[in-house]
Image (cartoon, rainbow, N blue to C red; front, side, top):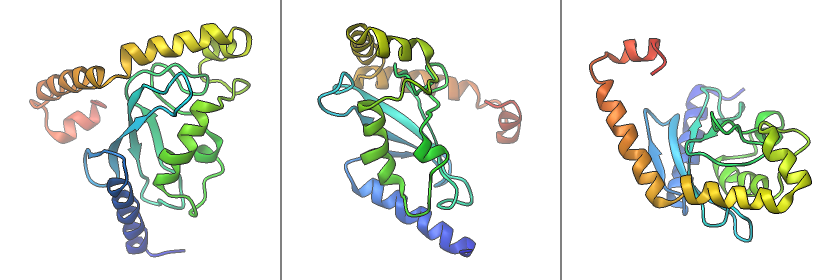
Length: 181
């Protein structure tokens, strides 16, 4: 097994690779917690959307997969609408140290949005529409993109989260963590 310093070096390199690419990365608290601005893939109903995707890298990264989730709402069979959790086998079960963070944002997530797996849904309503009423599904995706996945929606969400963060400043970091804030 690799040394802890080798794992840290790999984590740093993967994050730098993302930063140097076309992805906007916002470090939240140490290099293992950050958000990445992610754009919907072309020629899909997600095409004009922009999302913030939160990423948590475990201490054992790259041997253990990162946890990812959409911050702003997205309508998709394999993404939980309320939590933003993503059901994607290549991240959840098939992850190997051969993958890096750029694979997630340049390959895995675009593929997931382009080719949903409605037979293994986190959002059953989206899966049902995708399977049985594709036009309604596409319309719902576009509606969500227009409501929740625009640059304006991200700015509004950022202002709201900044307001809620400032209201939490009365708590110590340990108290806030204990309360799951």
